Length: 182
Image 1 (cartoon, rainbow, N blue to C red):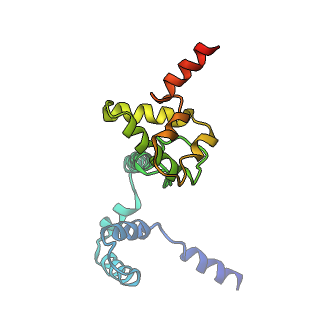
Image 2 (cartoon, rainbow, N blue to C red):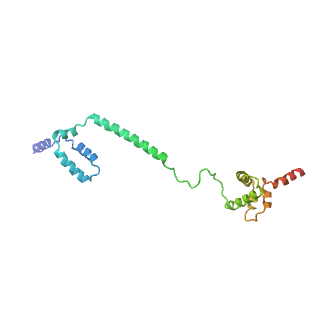
Image 3 (cartoon, rainbow, N blue to C red):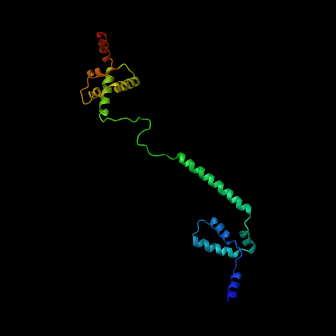
């Protein structure tokens, strides 16, 4: 009995048929087909091939193997380059504030006080151009203390308030008079 089993196993030794390579090539040529249909169709076409055609799938030359490895390396490099391009082009994240604005403490009263100050500053300095007015007005605003800035909150618009500003032309003669007294 042992001889029968051993003889059967020796007869069932498979010769390399090349069907796997044929199946891989068939999958590449027909990627849109469903798996079952593609397998059945490949099996039918494998049966129609002559033995020499079948053997061409068994002995794959080493040149083809090295060519496919080289091709894989090229595609890997091109994929890596494409990923790098996507990373460069991709935005890093959404910014909630403009990057050019300095981060500072925001006082909710500033949105009320500063426009009132600028309107009064504009009425006193009519001779200045718009750009000079903005520049000097903001410099004058930053030079004010919090107490002086609070005078511009919900107050009647008068030129008297600008006397507290050190950059004002109204304040300059009084400052000169104080210096002369000393």
